[in-house]
Length: 470
Image 1 (spheres, helix red, strand yellow):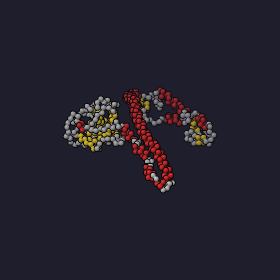
Image 2 (spheres, helix red, strand yellow):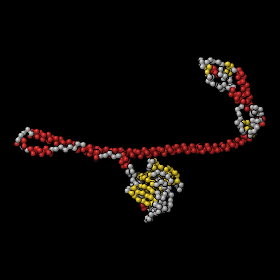
Image 3 (tube, one colour):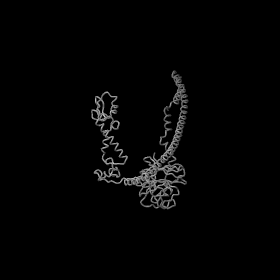
Image 4 (cartoon, one colour):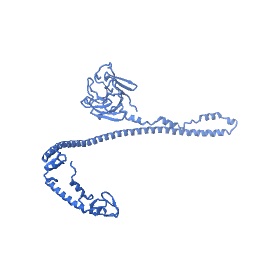
């Protein structure tokens, strides 16, 4: 770019720093800075001492302003030069040489005349005709203009999509909010019913024990009256002597023995503590989800020959063996895919089970499958086949895409996978049962029984299926 012109420097030096216009009746302060007389007077009009310079902030004890006549003359010259410069610009002439501005210097990005083109300032620069420059730069700008219009269109399209996403997110959030409220209302209703049931049990036991206590009080009152009468009789007998005292003494002693008091104080509180113990919270919660916790077991009749199924106590294991087992082939057994189904199918309700994945690689696929899923030959683990499952592979959890063998990465593979089936809603949801967060939810419309689905991909891969621990 060209250096700043002397004309611009001259205009700067003849401009007041307060009003930013040409000096009018310039005056000079003791620090050497000049201002319009009216401008500096307004700045100092309410001051009686310590007059600051608006430019350098130096203060003076007295107001001292001297006319700057030389600067006033320079201002007049600057005004004349500026007027001439505007005239030349309006006529399209060079300010320095008065020649027509027919050329354009690409380095300095300014219009120049033929004399400027031959000068030392522009002699080594690339100078072209203004018409050529206009045409060339218009073509460049038009090229950018098309791209910018395309970018603007794409941005506006993305903006519309984002605005639509706002509505979708709000709708989805509202649906989830209603589901959460509904589920918690069901849970609260169950807890309220459980509370009433427990309180009723407590009231019944209280009434039972209070009735026993009241009966004992009546008996004890009768017993105390008998004892009082016996005490009076003994005191009267002790006042006699000889044969009169010994008369019927054995009968009196027998009555003393029969009226011995057996202390049972405190047994009622211990009895109610023993009879009625308030259930722990997790016991209540277990009752709440009792219907969900189906006793899911694997069906050996459907297991691929390379799957070994065995049980230890209530825990069932499935392991991918190195060599196929000898087993009877039947129409329900998987012969190619290393899969096995659950023992019982589901046709209604909500169900939940957890599968612990053993080993480092975690190579398996878990979920649900419809009853008519293929048992012979190869197939993909996709909903179109009748399988809603996630795949664990190389330490990650993947979702198979519909009608494709490609997989979409979802999350890190958990050590324990929770599977929740809501048959009526057509939903199967997968959870990381270690970290307690949702991985993914499939939605569908189930029209036939569905079974827990297990597939062991890696050699020597093992899974564990047993009762939930609370």
